[in-house]
Length: 318
Ligand code: A2P
Image 1: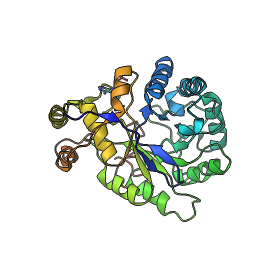
Image 2 (image 1 turned 120 degrees about the vertical axis):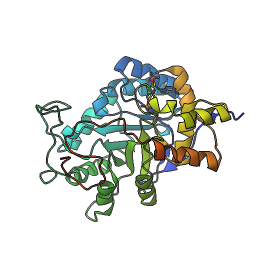
Image 3 (image 1 turned 90 degrees about the vertical axis):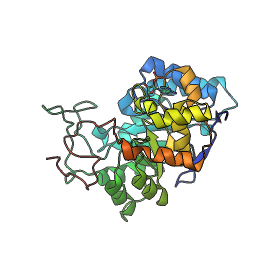
């Protein structure tokens, strides 16, 4: 039997800062439960919290962080790593967007500000503007691209609003474009993507890690209901090590040096999700091989175009 232990591991970002490898994810955490979850996580030892404008829980996250810091004078703000994300409808005005996020969070700065998607959405129609078919209303790449947006977002670092910037949901061609664009003032520090044993994104992970972009895994358990944990190979390994399947998945991500963001509003699960074990190379390979049999993406918003496909920008689905 192996006893899982709290993971205090960090990895280095391209701005020199350290980022804890395990964070509390808050996607789909409703405001009141989110406050309790964040307080509980910080009390238990989490030092990294991930939120977003679109999650509509920045106020709860900020209140929990500030209440925790007030009641724990031994922990400094600089001991915590707080990430939030700009909604694509705000890409043309990131300075105002981050000022509003900091106001909701009641923080002077965030540690990481991520562009939530690779497409800008129209502004002035709410957080999730959609057309008559239910597809997100995006701004054509030719008119205002993620490169244009990133050029504005990087300026927030020197203005002191955020320590670093990065992106989410960038597939290989898109992250390559950003990394290789010589006109950009900096390379994104993070690329946060859906990653789990059914979607290990090995090529993307390899490219990012070789080019100084830290990879973060959202929905590591498959999002709502944690469907990935029903995978027989994970259950078999959980039995072998006498831990939960969640521990196997999270330990696998840590072993890949991927920042992993399990979401939970359940105290016992929050406690469980920050504890990891070391597995043998053979067992890690077994998990790597799961996708050869079953490959699945759980979160695929209606963009009306193939945003996650392997082709470069703006290839229509049909
Ligand atoms: P809850 O928040 O009610 O505890 P993901 O991190 O992939 O987005 O998965 C989140 C989902 O997985 C939520 O439904 C969450 O439920 C559930 N979950 C989180 N941690 C665990 C765990 N250790 N075991 C089982 N389910 C979990």
